[in-house]
Length: 206
Image (cartoon, rainbow, N blue to C red; front, side, top):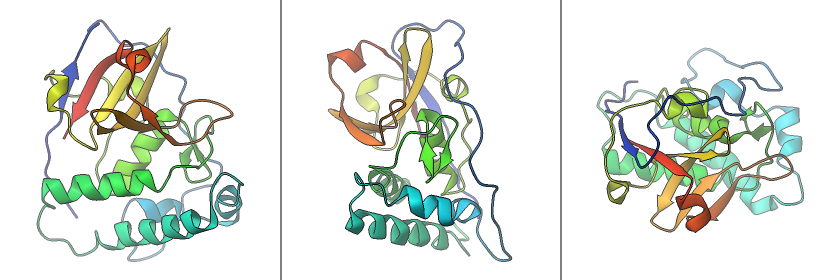
């Protein structure tokens, strides 16, 4: 399976060398793979720990079921593909998956459905579709070229700077984005308000 895409960047403010974010690679359980499994979601297909994470009270039962079905569909649909997926279809599927991860808890260094940190969420969603992005928000912010924010589309990667910390998220529309904010929180849809706009530094677009 191969996707053909280019990466560009919106640079809104500071273009100096990016610092490190709080994310670190890792996951609570080792990758899992069996013959004929596509790369991506199934490599971290939920085991007992993941199922336990999905039973937390802020994740409704229907959402958990939909999430599991969506992950299976998204990954299995990648098998046997001989042509690049149209961009609009890819964007729709990326954001459909991201929306259905809402409610999963924040976990420092998390890159699977046991929990995500900010860049881990971005990494996981794109990895499910075989698209490689850097693991940290710092490196995600170093991709591509600068374009205006007005050209951002659903699925693009937002890069914020909060104090000395770099933070990444997925652009939903001109008023909202999806991210895994901080310890004690969970993946959620956030308003792209003045607080966030003032801290937005770059946008990575497919």
